[in-house]
Length: 391
Ligand SMILES: *Cc1c(COP(=O)(O)O)cnc(C)c1O
Image (cartoon, rainbow, N blue to C red; front, side, top):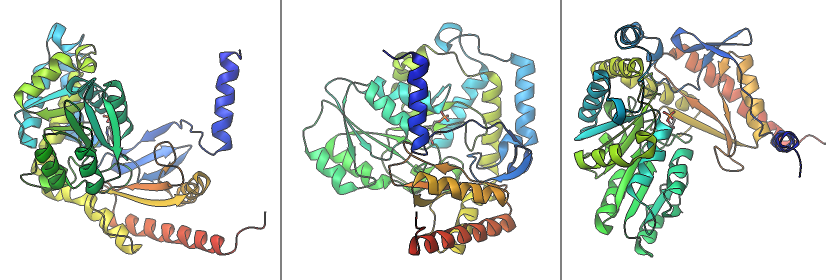
């Protein structure tokens, strides 16, 4: 048997050979959407801080004040020692903002999904999950012990066919509002209709919709009247903090507070994280111009490159091989932009890409410069494809 050390080295070498090894790079985030990395100042077009609120004075001040007033940590799981008044206020505000009866806050979005799905379905049930759903939705689905089937991305014919097939005692449809790596939006009206017709339940992960689409209320707000049973999201993107939330009916939320293991057995959100999210939510609710900006930036960029009109702040440019995406990232870094190459297993084999995430703080002039640099990269790649290197 190889030593653990040898095993780890071997695994890493395998990733390296396929250009899939990843590295952690110390990076200091600066105001205005910039970062400092290896002595260079780069404009980040990869952060999900869509409204730039992680550096907003009111958000910072709210977190500092909460630390002073309530201390830095929650002390224990909430069912054991209760919760900060700030957390209760945040849950009420989130529920109101999302038009739901109630909300529950988890320590991260990942924890919210991994806890929620197994609390709703289990052995004998069926989960139908979009093939491009986020890793944590898959984790939650697998941990539930329900039968898990994926349907083709946003394909309602495939979803309908699977709903007609062998049902479970309960069926849960799992999808994203704004897809994190593709930026497109699920047809929530049609999913809601199908769920209704087949007596299925729906869970929507809208991590990239909140604060960006539907006037900031998320993807479901684009489909008024569409049925969505459970809406999940994160405090870590547009809301500039950390933590996850789930919105639903009072009974569903109470069930989660009793049964979601990542809630029951994990320490509550620190008061400062709740305070920062509350302050960010205040701004997102008040400032429609700010909320409109990420999508406007994404559209400006896409138009300059003759790409399809984006529906969200996320714009992918699929390049294919991991090495191609990494080379493109390096070229943009030379131009002063941080645009992370996204590789498998985050995206499917053969679809490595540049993923641009536009934030409110990126100036139009920089969007234009980025478009020019990207056009140049795409031109070079086309040239290389026409005359492949002789190697
Ligand atoms: C980021 C993300 C999550 C996880 O949220 P965290 O709060 O970062 O743990 C879940 N789902 C989707 C679609 C995401 O993009």
